[in-house]
Picture 1 (cartoon, rainbow, N blue to C red):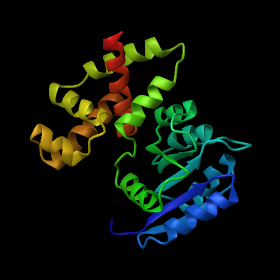
Picture 2: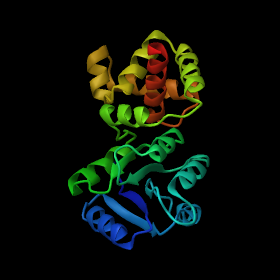
Picture 3: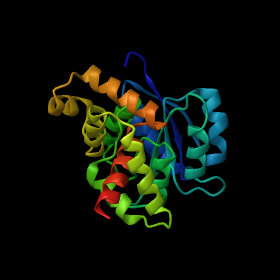
Picture 4: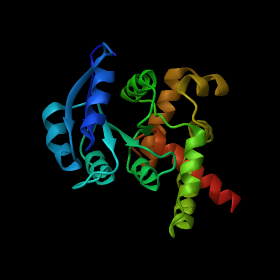
Length: 222
């Protein structure tokens, strides 16, 4: 990216905010746009500072990260949201991903991996491994799972054969370059397919495509 990546840190723990800020500020291409101690501060901070990426804690006292993420992603041209958690399989994390978050980070992430993750999200790449996706989905059991899976199959039926191949590859956690190599497509062509998939399915990002693929696969197995 030609300009610095602006990051807003949202966490009710001052030490966590300080640690994340110190790590990210040390990267020459990342700028700390601001810090917030609760989700209720997010709308004003985003409007004022226009961050590219928001690191969002899940558990906060007044407005939790899930509610803040849903509200933020429903606005026009929202920043990418990455949820922060201390657990690998948090039901609220999956709900945040369905709301449009680009991925999640564990709070004990290695500093170099944190910087890399922020760069990837700012560039439009999700940060959610296939193993973690499966773990999150299997961890969550809700009464609407059957209907959601049936809807996922209907969604995928809207796609062309090639678009579905790209969607399945996204569900496997593959990057644009990896998808291109597997399907013999250029990276710009992969990006074009991803854009069309998002438009056809009315989704916000690649993670939501991956979740629909996993839901559809679960429906096929049931």
